[in-house]
Image 1 (tube, helix red, strand yellow):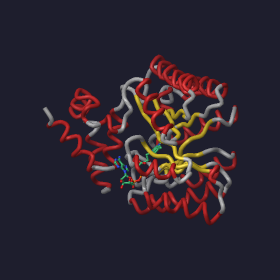
Image 2: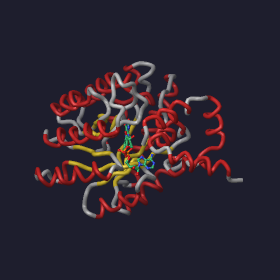
Image 3: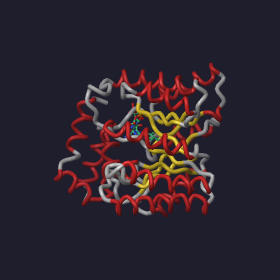
Length: 305
Ligand code: FDA
């Protein structure tokens, strides 16, 4: 993917006219390919179907950049409802959250209070919460939150983005704690002062991080649809005799579903990230930016009567 096209989509997406047009036309514009639906029940049905295919799930209530305490509280309640339904329905699923969804933009203590309550609830249910990683201005604050939570109980983890120059050092510190980390390429618009802009550099950095965290003996979630990175991981674990219980593959709902089933069929632990909710727009835009060809799919849907 050209980084120019990616930048153009991410910048255009902030335009008010575009935002208005997209949200007015709703999920039928194509977002439903990547989003399970607007209601929790929609996500439960998708999760059940994926579980039946041998795939684990992580559920995500869409929402980010929440700027009021009440808004963050409401999101936390929505996340608690997810943990409850996972337990009630016996789903093979955990929870992913965005720190700014739970109040990080208002203050670290607001996010911490909401997260700690969710962590306790997850702990009671024997479940796990992962803090997604957002843009680079939030990396320090997110790492600090996850460390505070991890000191309370080890049922939390986070995400490290391969495109950031700082990531090898951050990952090393998390490995010292023994933390379960999801490794990704990175989905935000970042300046060249903090992140690689060439895909080949990010891919190389990604491989190094996978080897680093696995070699440290830590649980590693390799989150990608990139077959070359998946092949690298398979070879690395075979060479190093790393047990399958120490890693999993993760992919997004709606992207490469056949590859998801294939890996699960071969006995690799594979988890699908299933987002749902009404605040689907920023998530959808990041999926378009990763693959500008997806924009044609949106335009084709717009033309439909
Ligand atoms: P790459 O972009 O090179 O794509 C490889 C191939 O996958 C493409 O050739 C295409 O076939 C397919 N593909 C990829 N994206 C597609 C799309 N949108 N539509 C259709 N096909 C597509 N990022 C972040 O910054 N913070 C986070 O917390 C997370 N969390 C997260 C969880 C999970 C489970 C996944 C899979 C990814 C994330 N990401 C993320 C997103 C990640 O940073 C990255 O943007 C995407 O995974 C796309 O990169 P790939 O590794 O798939 O490679």
